[in-house]
Amino acid sequence: ILYNLSGLSGLAHLLGAAVAGAALDGNGDTPTGTARLPDRVVAITVWTVYSIVREEECCGSDKAALLHLIVQLLAAEGSCNGPRITEVQSACCSAINAVVEGDARLGNLLIDLGGLPLILGYLRHYVATGAHQEQLS
Image 1: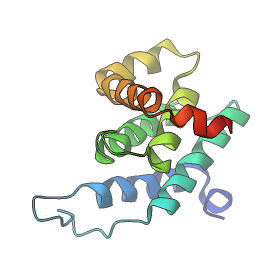
Image 2 (image 1 turned 120 degrees about the horizontal axis):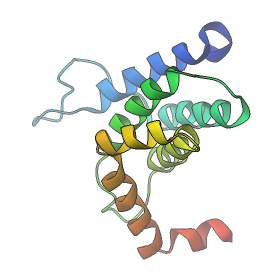
Image 3 (image 1 turned 90 degrees about the horizontal axis):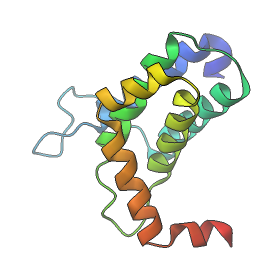
């Protein structure tokens, strides 16, 4: 519904709210006072961005803004040290791939944003935990 009403800018706004809600201070509170969106809502939003970017030759300059938000969201999700990879982490990595694919400028931006260590951590954890085996079965 949000995409139909506001397009990618509506989804980007929702991602921005997710980033703000995911940033916790030392007390476990959000510094902006923004409530944390449920992980399922965040994951669905990121998967929607992924689908739109994959299906359409769209976005132009919006891709850089989307990439920035998705990398921030992945960073806010924390490291992949737990026993499971979250749906938000998985969605973020897939969306980053879709946004960056075939555009060297966006690949450079991904590096500048510090996204490569996040993605590599995700991939290492994915292989080490055998998560890829779960998804194949």
